[in-house]
Length: 452
Length: 102
Image 1 (cartoon, each protein chain N blue to C red):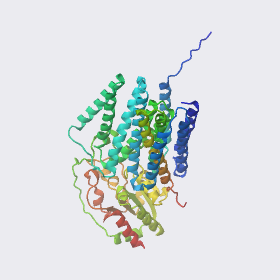
Image 2: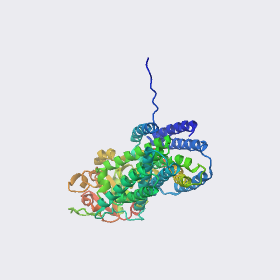
Image 3: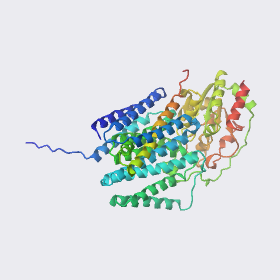
Image 4: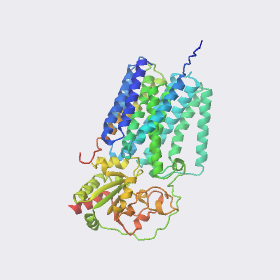
């Protein structure tokens, strides 16, 4: 590769880093993204101008196909479908790294052992990322059941797959001329990706999607080693670190270790139902309106149900009406509300809710006692007081938003079916809780109508 | 007289060095991203991980009509989806984040 290309990569790495730095505030984030994309442009143009490139036909075809698909997807995707899109993109990134690793070997079959190992890593991580992301996509889009799938002997099967990967990788490094070993590595990596994600339930998807995000970066990194390319290593490591941090944030927000999320099959229905004392108190939109009209402080706590019902715009409308009525309105966002990190924030931003009105859990909890009405929209486990009070609860110890400390709590819910993992929510039975049954969007529209 | 031995750092050591520094840098940078921007951060990371396109270009443009060439071309297409789609959707999202009163 030309020295000039290498210098261009230095500029592009600096632009990536600077772009990510600007992501530390919503005010500068958009510019940061533009700077990062400029860095990518520099890297791509420099590579195209490199004298090793002699044939542009397939590059142009590949870029045209990818560019059209990517451009259309970015324009057409609904904001509620962002988790699915990120899952798919993680998968594409993984597959691209797998192909680059494979091509690097086909291009240079006489490579040294170090390069062979990095080729294996690039194929392995890329393959796991690809099929893992496809399963995650299937679960998020409900194309396949989002429940955790566990079966007897799962650990044994997984161990055999891992052994198979290790063995065929070792054989490949010892005997690179026998292409059969490479096929085994590719096949088993793809199988392993499926096996790791099937036992993970829908509500744990924020962790999985963050982890796969990280893998897609690490796969790019490994591909960088396989083809001796600095910029792949730098950019891949940045993405890898980002995904790992998000994974940690998500695990901490559920008070569970990563291995518990990955291997326990949480939510596969093995939890004993705990009986909760008390009585459900439904409320009509009209009565809810009278309470809201008198409220001077309202906290809205959204969950995945808001995304499903596409209720973000009417929620914003209600918040505006409440503010006009003199109430202070805040949103309390739990880190694992929704199906990916920051899911709720994007939906509310789409509905024009200013980001300084969105409070993190640690900010809203101390204020909860002064809140007149807390409105829970399609959230369940993240507001479950059992996490605080009931030591036998499977989610005991998970930090939750303490809506039950508010004077009155409205819970908008479709029916009394219990949440993920069949965990009973004592919140619904508390004296200060009122249930507003029905589709979240319909219920809020009802409230909005009462105001006007 | 002092004799100076000149070591040539092997490529893999050099690359691993870069990897180590990048990981630490990545942790420092990403830790400062607020929770409200975590979704755009992920889609932006999707775009950056599309950097694989750079590696794929050199393989797809080798001029030989062989397996490496076809695999490289497919990787160019997949990685370009990430680059183009990732940056555009991140921009679309970030354009929606507004401060109160603006």
